Length: 294
Image (cartoon, rainbow, N blue to C red):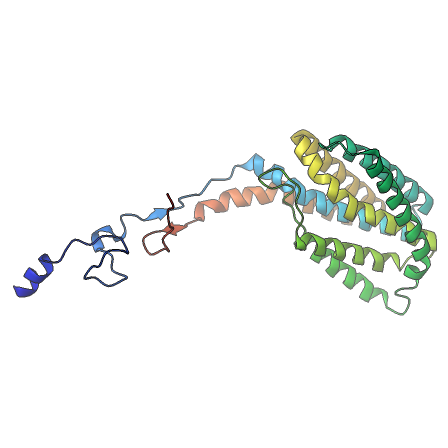
């Protein structure tokens, strides 16, 4: 009886820190312990088509890698002329720079455009002068080692790339992982270019690599911000180009590319929508309290 009387005489427990109470620090009454249990409090369910739109960024990146590998194969088998690739790269640069200027929200002075053109010419000349060195870079290395190294570098590029084009404020952002991904792609391009026979082929492939792995990722967020239909159209164009170029080398590889892009774009969102029903994020009084500043 004395214990019951002692328990009933204790003051009511309050969830505050500033008040001295005859209870342990981790004490919570059993009747309210699970009363504040929350399941998936801030969960927003995914829907299929928005996920398809978001997956287009990954699809474009994979398509660009397939396009580059196909171009390398066409150069190596002499199905593509190096001068043609150089002309295509220069034309793509002009169109891309014009599109970048049009989509730029800030007015740039003429001097900035002149500096950009001068820098482009310097890079162009630098790659030309460096091509003989790059061609002999892996002369003492077996082809199997080169293929394995290029595969690892492209895989690293795929894993480290930043597929979020813009942040919540709509500003472009760069991450350390994006820089590492770019370096991995350029390194893979250089080791592949070193297996080509002529200096002009090495220069053409290296110039193409600079455009698709450095310049295009800078333009891609602007296109995504401009229009969702244009973003989807860009994905379709890049995927079609990848399939076309690969089909010139091997029909089987083109089929595998088609299966990969289809899975990433259309099947993976279905799996994510299906798997979200198993999400079970529990929050309760055992979590660290969040201070409310008034």
